Amino acid sequence: MSRRAPRRPGSELAPGYELLEHLNRSRAFDVYDCWSAERECRCVVKALRPDRLRDLGARRRLLAEGRLLERLRHPGVVRCYETLSAPEPLVVMETLTGETLAHLVDRRRRPLSARELAILGLQLAAAIGYLHRLGYVHLDLKPSNIVAEAGRAKLIDLGIARRPGRARAGVGTWCYMAPEQARGGQVGEAADAWGIGVVLWEAACGDTPFSDEAVEYPQLVHRAPPLGSRRRLPAALAGAVDGCLEPNPASRPSLVELRAALEPVAGTRG
Image (cartoon, rainbow, N blue to C red):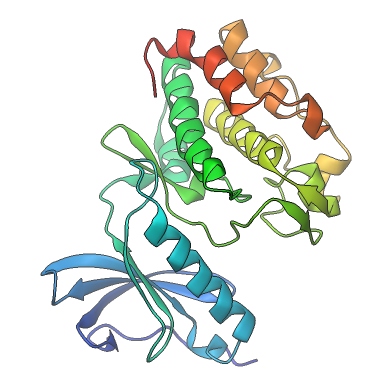
């Protein structure tokens, strides 16, 4: 398959959407900074890569993500303005002015404090709990899919969100997915508890607990090191994160239990 370059600034992705800048590229999609003539503001547009326009699977996934985002009304989830199916599939979202959690963790000299970690966990649990109540699981929680904006964590990518049930092996991001995702099988709300745990562990320590590239899926071979072995943190916080990273989904805390453990550390509700 040819690797065509992203579309150039100044072109139109769709009527009324002028491309300003290419922001990111994944296996199937490009993300652009665009100007919306209708709204008279910038917006973020997710589109198929030019070399994937005939990929029917990618087309279906993009449209499904956009339609799900349109249904979501939560301060912890990026707002979707509209989903277009013609002349090609596009998902039009609000522009966020913050930075990804991955970038924030990388640039800070000091790691997030215990209170900041607890608040982050509460905000993620609130957004993910809302998604669960609508009957979906996220399955791709990671620092690069979270934007920190004005003290609020926002999810920006629901590309593989789906109904709970049997899933193909390896659908997700290799060092962040829960063991049941990596091996394939039944995935449910516990997989997102794992995702929150991995995000909090990385935000606390600056790296992922599963970085062993010598094996395909390190989470199937190793347990996460106890968070307390890497940082001195309140026992309730460290224990909650360790619990989220239990290999057995049935042993992980529910989001209600996770919030109960984090609220005293945060000193507030998320």
